[in-house]
Amino acid sequence: MAKTQPTHGTKKRQCYFCYSNASHIDYKDVSTLRRYLSSFAKIVPRKRSGVCMAHQRKLSSAIKRARIMALIPFVQK
Image (cartoon, rainbow, N blue to C red; front, side, top):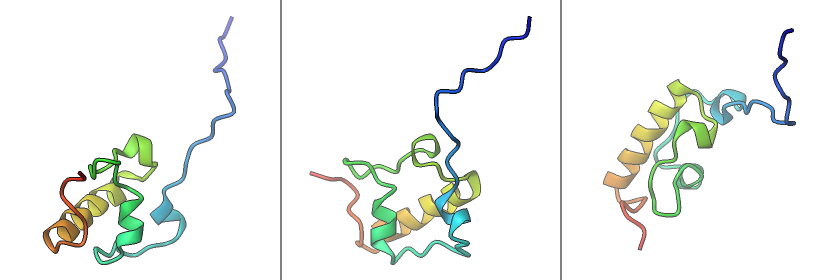
C-alpha cells in the first residue's frame, strides 16, 4: 500500500522578487527591506520569508549595505 502525502491546505509560496520581475534589489528601498527583517532587526531566513536562494543572497547584501549607509539599524532597541 502506497502512503499518500497529507495535504493540509498549504501551498508553496512564490518568491516576491521573482513574481514581480525585479531585476535587482535596491538598498535604498527601505520599506521593502524592512519586510525581511525580524522585530530585532535580524535578517529573516528563506524558510520564513519565502524568497528564493538567489534573491535571498541579493537581499541580504542589500540589507547589509543599507545598514552601513545608516538607512536601517543594526540592532532594534
